[in-house]
Image (tube, rainbow, N blue to C red; front, side, top):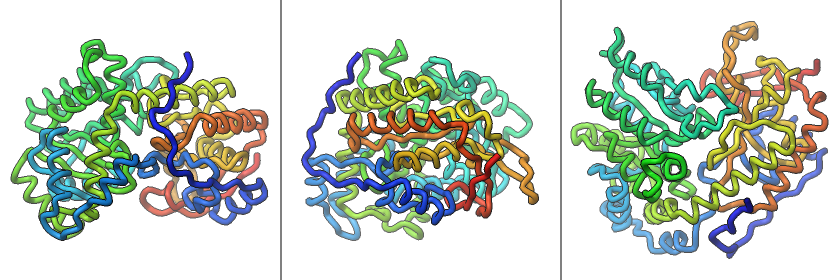
Length: 459
């Protein structure tokens, strides 16, 4: 099946850097083999993240020019508020500069120390903000998530049996919040079914525990639901998304993903008392409630992005791009987490590089090699991200899987760029036995993958 034509044409172009292997070797040494440290002009194809890296539409840029930059009560805010309310049904909408700000504000207001949050999978900043609040984040992925090769369509679901046990168990009084991540980024971008979300909402209501959506990729989840869940096949992505939001008590949203903007997000709430507490924190740390750390133009761009992102032709093209890259990856001899989602592909580095043990970070090794081979920046989701060692460097925990994420920025790269990624993957596989592992030289106490220093280890 051939891929559909992208539902847009190019109006503005930006040159991309082309570097030599010697330049890339020098750059990696300079940043201590941490790809987050690279300058953007040292990267040819940047698949590090889909967060804030997409291309805005002409309509979004036009909306930004009309943005109202009043400090209080700008018309841009009221337009933004109306669009978010129509989509989510939440009566209280607080703009923030990005999703992690919404996490910090909500958790500061809702989580006294010692509480527990449950999730299908907390992503890195979500977990960090829970822990910074003095609480514990517990993941309850469904059993299907453990089969990376399965074509099961909803491996992002929460484990309903374990959720019910937790809500009825000895620590039930400590459970303050359930967070459902749509799509489940920590489980390779796999979607959550509407049936699973509805059953989760029912359990949460039964036990009087609030349910929030981490809705960064709500539209992509809705698209996959329309493709694979029989009860929703006659619904539009917009209709599925609206239904999902209405099942929850609120949401955390990084608009840098499915808002298709470079910065921004919001916190949506049903409960008035909670909204008032969050608003006080917003004023103290982000800005006045009608701008929340954003310019008026940003609010108008988000409002339009939230409309464009649920258009079926846009989502179809995004799915086609992911499917095209998945085919090239398989042809190169690299297993991926199946089935491919929309926002990223996840390469099974542990299977590709069995000579590199978990404590030598095979995912990070593959990510470094893709950069050396062709200037492609990606990110490891394995034992560097999830593992730990004692003070002597002896492994204590390893990740369940050693993965590399190739994120797909929205409306940014065409099929020729993806074909180039396929060529680099094929070239990398040819010398895979020579790829070295890595050891940590220095690491911060939290979110270490962002700022760690490493060095290659041969043998």
